[in-house]
Length: 272
Image 1 (cartoon, rainbow, N blue to C red):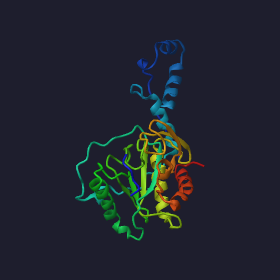
Image 2 (cartoon, helix red, strand yellow; image 1 turned 90 degrees about the horizontal axis):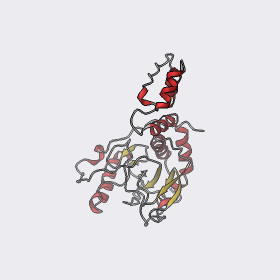
Image 3 (tube, helix red, strand yellow; image 1 turned 30 degrees about the horizontal axis):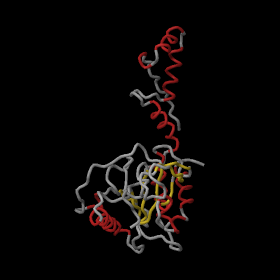
């Protein structure tokens, strides 16, 4: 098991009124003295997307800026489809502020399965992690079978930054995507599988405007990783488990496909 705990519209929108108490006193004085300036200010406020909630301006602007590089959400099978009666008691889900990177894994399980059996295989993995190992849940945030079907893994909401248990030291602010199977050197990796991994990565990273090919810096939370706790490591936004932890996961064959997965994910985000 390679997981580790740890056409633009024709209508022009109406401009918002400038609400005096949203502006500094000095700015309100200028608006009062210069005819027509209030309308200009309204246009500027609309264009930059000022957040009306305290302290939310920068986050809102960043979110709006990232819209241009958002990818479509792929179809995701909910965890109820594979979990069945296997659920154990779970503590409250932990969340990070955002997802900045994706770590790709393989499950180190047999490859010759019928895709109709994928839910049963995932339930088996869950039982091994949440049952035998006494983890709070399955470690991966998403799992992908060889036919390209994406399954929700860890509970907490697929659109949220759920802290998983997949890459020792780097579970916070990342998403773990596991490929069902074993992909050591020379093992063929199905195109449907890599396309699905790229689709999930493009969507999740696009929510925060991250280019799948870009370098990201992550702080290790556990000295059992390749980086001492509290130190920073530089990764590509889509990386393999072995980049952060002492393991061969996700296998040499799948690692070799990561450059193509990153490029496809960037394409899905509308990047060049």
